[in-house]
Length: 159
Ligand code: SF4
Image 1: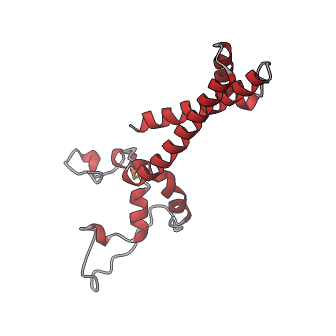
Image 2: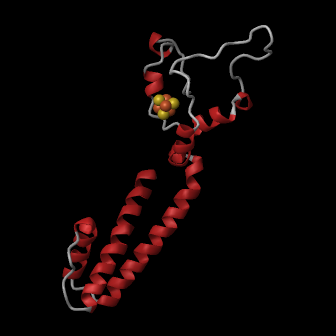
Image 3: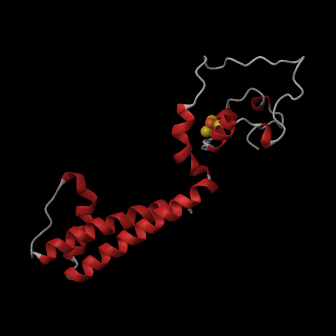
């Protein structure tokens, strides 16, 4: 679904920009001026123009592409918190608030005064640990290189 959404965003963007370039060119009875930074839109626009579509229909294609694109972006934005792509939003604050001590330095356990050790429930996580959780892209590298997991025992911190 995510890949289809991203493909839809790309296609509707190209229809919007390419359609508009082609519509303006058709109104003025000329070809589309080529700008290197609009290579993909120029290609789509040239294709639409050479198909013999009228200026009004080209503008309609552009407008439909624009509103479909905007609607998809807004819908995708609302879906983000429910999937692993939420890291698009949480990634930056996660890096900003990262731990600054040396990598691998462990915090000391206060065994004598602590009543809880480790994490048993979600509410045991700190706000930063929650943020880190939402920033996970589920690539699996941490599990692949986890010393407990590579022993072959049924130990998985991802599941
Ligand atoms: S390494 Fe582990 S925690 Fe980090 S993004 Fe990949 S799966 Fe998530």
